[in-house]
Image (cartoon, rainbow, N blue to C red; front, side, top):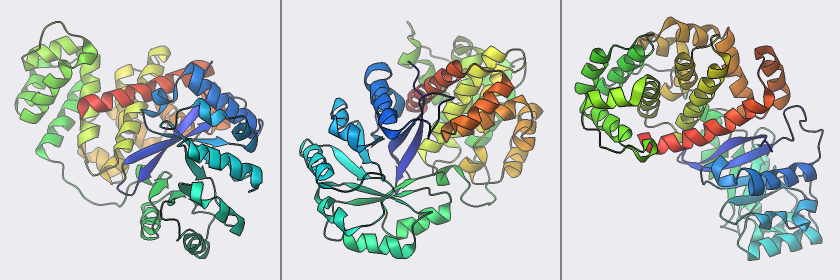
Length: 406
C-alpha cells in the first residue's frame, strides 16, 4: 500500500519543529472531497499502523491527524500511541454529549486533543478541560474573534493556541504578539526580508566546493585544498565519512582518503547538505530538512529520467531551490554570489525546463495539491506510484541526514 500524505510542519514560537500535520489523500487521482473524512482517517490510521509507521514519516515528532465523530467512536485514535499522535477533532463535528464523552475518555488515557479550525461557541467551554490545543485559521478569523477566544479560555491556562495558514513573517509576528504558541503555514519558507548579507569564510569555502562538485569531472586536488584551508569543514567531512551509516570496517584518517572513499555522488551530497545546513543557522531547521528532502527527491527522479536529467545537478538544484528563503534574500542576489553551474542558475531564475517542472511538482506535493500534481507528473511522464514512494523515501532520508551533518 502506498502512503499518499503530505506532512506540513508545525513550529513553536522559537521556530523549532514541534510536530507535523499529516494531510491524507486516498491516491494521486482520488483527492478531497471525493472521499469523506471517515474514509480518509481510516486509511491514514491503517497506513500509519500497518504499512509505513508514523514515526518513519514524521521523524519521531507528533503527528496531528484529523478524526471524525465516527472514527473517534470506533476508537481509531487508540490504535496509535499517545506519544505519536495529536487527535485533531474536525471542525465539521458539532459539540454534543457523545463527543464530550469521547474527549473525556481520550484525555483520561493521556491523549493530546486539538480542535481544528476553531469557531467559537459557548458550548465548547464544556470541552476546555480536556483540550490541549486550539487551532485558529488566521486568514479567516478576525482580531476581535481571536480576542474573544482568548477571553473564553482564560480560565484554562493549559490550552495553547495554534495559528494556521501563517503565510508571512508579518503574520507570524502578529500571531506571536497575540499569544499563539504554535504556527503552521509557509512563512518559514519565504524570505523574512530582502537584505544584503556577506558570506563567512567557511560559507565561501562551501560555495567554492559547490562549484567544484557541479563540474562534470571532479578536480580532487582543488577540492582537497579547499578542505585543508578550513578546519571545521575538514572535521565534519571526517566525521561524516566515519559515521555508522556507511558501515566502514576501518577508520578514515585523511581528507584525501575520505574524498576517495566517499566517491563523487556521496561527496556532492555532503557538500550540498553542509552548505544548506550552515549557511544561515537562524533559520528553522525544518526549512533545511525540506531542502534536503527536495534534493534527494530530485536525485531519485533524475536517475530514472537519465539522460534527460543529470542526478548530481538535480540534487544541487533541489537543495538550492529554497536558498533564497534560507538566506533571506531574493534569488537573483543569492545566485550572483554563488559560483554555480549555469544550468542550475537558469533553472532557478527562469523557472523553465524539466528541472523547474520537477521543483514545481515538489511544491505541489508538499501542499498536498494532488490534483495538480497529476498534471505535472503526466507532463514529465512519471509513474505516479513510484513518485509518491520517492517522496516518502526522500523525507525519511532527509531526517536521517540532518542528524549526521548537525
